[in-house]
Image 1 (tube, helix red, strand yellow):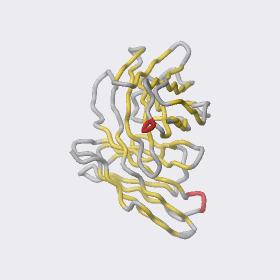
Image 2: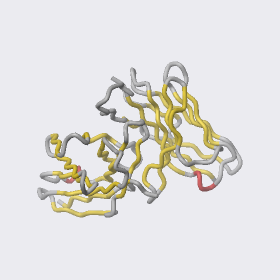
Image 3: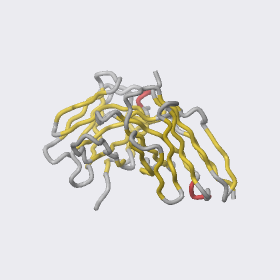
Length: 111
Length: 117
């Protein structure tokens, strides 16, 4: 049972436009959500997180939105840059130090 | 501050052998988690250690085991290797800070690429 789902395995966006990556979860006990970026042959790099007490968190070009009623979160990258091309994973946890990751979305930013 | 380090970075083994992977967390981090990444499967949680105790465990067979030392360094062992164990094994550490507002972020090492022939 996949508790965290990223239904789009890949996404292509033009440079300078907005990239929107989506993530759905099923466990209502999750209260902390994270996004990671991963390049080939490297470990995931932490990007941004959001606690369930918020519905939005911004960090530079990256914004994460959380819709608890829909059990949905999204990562917005504005403007998208070629260096953003990577695999993006969302993760969720219920404060038990056990993190559940999605299967990832491969973002390609076209120059 | 140095990041999470994992050794070795690459490993080739044959079926039936056993392997030990090592992870050194960020200084001050007390929680260490291990993940397996295979194509199309995302990151599958193996287990998490805190103060030398396994606190959480994923759905992997008993051939996968781990331990944590008093300095928070951790090792993962896989016995009787199978072809399907070929994967990138990632270690992540976090502060494991206490408190009601859980905002503990995991930081990953570069991984160990295990190939089983």
